[in-house]
Length: 188
Image (cartoon, rainbow, N blue to C red):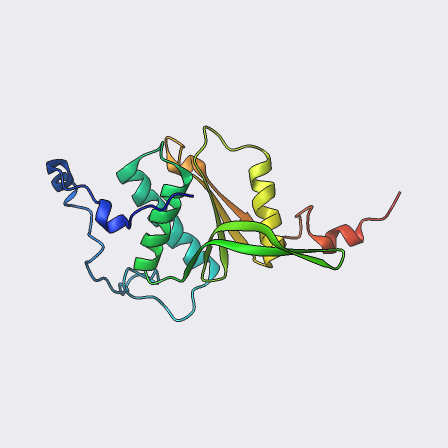
């Protein structure tokens, strides 16, 4: 895997970048506004919940997509999204190796989660023409193995990013992969 330079060193310095003056820079300190419970840049709460994390991830992904557009490699979006979330005060782990236990045997290289945010939300990043039917299933399995409730599947190649974001929740009552539900289904 190629190493990419830090996102701050690759910022464009062309005259067109001055057209983005209305977008706040990363260095601008923000605080929590009195009319909103949504944390802003620079003011991380002590304990993020899954909904707050999801909201910040979607907001950051939208900003990145607006500025860079579709068509880059998944690894580029991953690096930039991780950097943006760190600047917002979140704990981010990239390419986290998650071991799998199968029949009592532990496999260290089970899979790699693209991003784990605050050890509560798993992010799977794609940059494909369209998501396959297996992509949400893959993320749901990751959530189950990580014992997490919420994951976001983000396809940065979608022309409108809102059409490329899927929120997956693990352990809902109507979830066919929920082991408690499977135990209630009679054989026959």
